[in-house]
Amino acid sequence: MKKLVSIGIVLLSASFSVAASEDLVKYESHYSVKETADRFESIAKNKGLTLFSRIDHQKNARGVGLELRPTEVIIFGNPKVGTLLMQCSQDVAIDLPQKVLVSEDADNKVWLSYNNPSYLMKRHEIKGCDEVINKVSGILSKLSKAAVAK
Picture 1 (tube, rainbow, N blue to C red):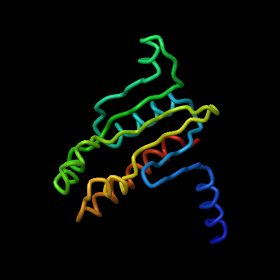
Picture 2 (picture 1 turned 60 degrees about the vertical axis):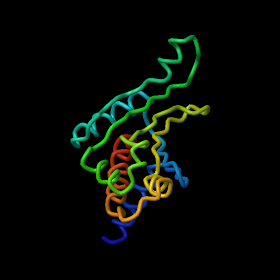
Picture 3 (picture 1 turned 90 degrees about the vertical axis):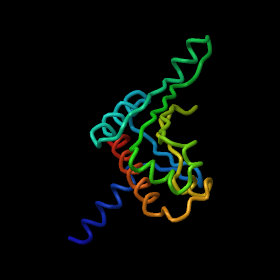
Picture 4 (picture 1 turned 180 degrees about the vertical axis):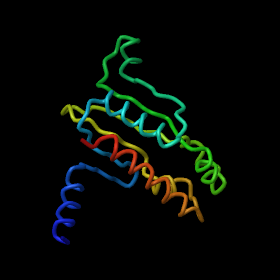
């Protein structure tokens, strides 16, 4: 049974293509930009998060006669959690509410990306808020994985 569970965990982790750098976390999606963004928005709403805005950069580019691969940004958050971060370092407000970028790269791969909360912690010298940062990291990861999973 242990081997079966271990194999399941390996297969589940292999189904997500994740690229993480110090400042950005990226998940490859199995869906189009629009469908990935729709999925993320729906999941975030169902989790009780506030959706502030959704920006279709490709549509805006077309509006001024320019071309851009599909690119959308969803701005969302939870004021209870965001306020706790701002109480630790008010400068973090420049990066709040949270944002996810859903975009198509030159190879037609779709990615869902967001700022790594650890990067925000370093950028704004946030001290004493590890629990909140960990909560934000966990929520972003769960939402993102759910949005891109088959």
